[in-house]
Image (cartoon, rainbow, N blue to C red; front, side, top):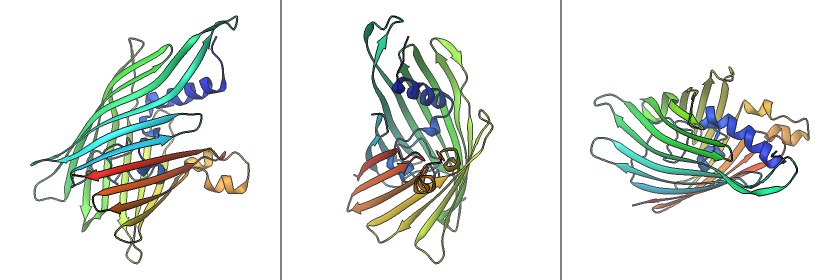
Length: 296
């Protein structure tokens, strides 16, 4: 018999992620935007339209700290080639070390729980049209004591620009593929993301809005975020979502207001970008993330 609050927390999170990989934060961009920003480029985020890309050659690494000693580390590259942009990445999330006991409460040993994503994205502009198309391919491996999951999946997406790159709409379909759970076939639940971005006319800001459609839980989620350009070196980010209502624990008013909300800052110095983000749950728990990117 296995027990403990940490074990229960992992089972809940893991079962959700088996069908909803876009719940996982692997970059400070997603943390700071509260899950919004599918049309904001990132080579290490699971919350992105695969048609998005950087036009710069870049290396980026990230570390994310969750509650209950859960953490993730990611590395990625953005490599503009002659006809398309190639972005390989590696993402790893550790759920920590757990203790296992039998029915008589005898200690059986420790085991380590984790998830890994190895992926590559390809995006390309359609000639003579302000349209990009893209695809992301992922191998996902998860291990938690008796649970062993392997899956192969891909995401596809498209985006259309209007006037400039900050006015766009996008459509992406995530987690299309097959999986095995303890050597038995399991179902992956695809998700659809409808996204938009709009540069404000009288403020130095871009607004991002995303609608996530999930047939598994039969409930749509809305994410809203913004990026403010303070100057050429400093950007501020903010975001929240409809998850705010699910996370309302009827505690302090401040916690209810700030639940499911992210904040962040991006500082750019020459060829190095440093980005920090924090995400607040309705119960006061926090996620913190740090990204460091370098152009080369």
